[in-house]
Image (cartoon, rainbow, N blue to C red; front, side, top):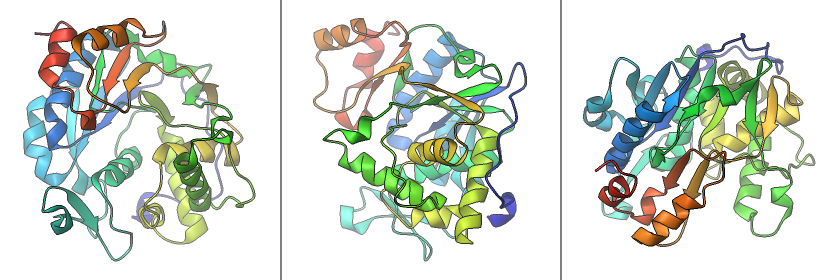
Length: 307
């Protein structure tokens, strides 16, 4: 893995070309296939300004997701992104209902951990300047131009200022501290900013430089470093790299969320769903119904007018 990146000091990103290329990136898995299909349909209908759409999946899910491929959409096998020493197994501790990724170099990892690693790793394989991350349980309801993610040669970094200073964000604070550790930031330099959302963008050259910095600091693969702490967030790592090590170079900040997400709680009734959509902010163009909540995908399709 080290050969993919050139370790060195933090590198200030060059200005993006006047019209940078962009790709949308979605990490998914078999239980979310129908949700991902809906994402693809609504993305094709409403989104402009993206040259390609990459769907990143585990090896055993590749054949299923190939149904979604087009000339501008590619399904990417995890085996082409992550080191071969990271192996996926059915987990006997969950009566084989869940998957676990094991190696001698990381902690045991769950699917949501490995999805984050895939999102970082795609930067070494894609060719587009800007990578736009969109979860597979998202559906676009309004027109959206990916040009919203760059301005004057800089990419938009989602950041909610000062959020971690408030009560009720302990897990996010742990993710932020672990991000600082991975990047070699002095533990006394804490961050109070939150960088986590869906429908956000990263610069591909900055991700590559970030991975190189992690490997320079620790002398081993960035996958090993990040995977050695099970409580991590790829968004926190990228955000802290940009703000703490690059002092924001190559980026501008935005706190508006383009996607309105129902993160927790019960599945919404039809009326609740309609009120949820009606309450979208003017800048919001998509909705997200967290898949683990269990909202029936057929109901979502019907309520947004696709069936």
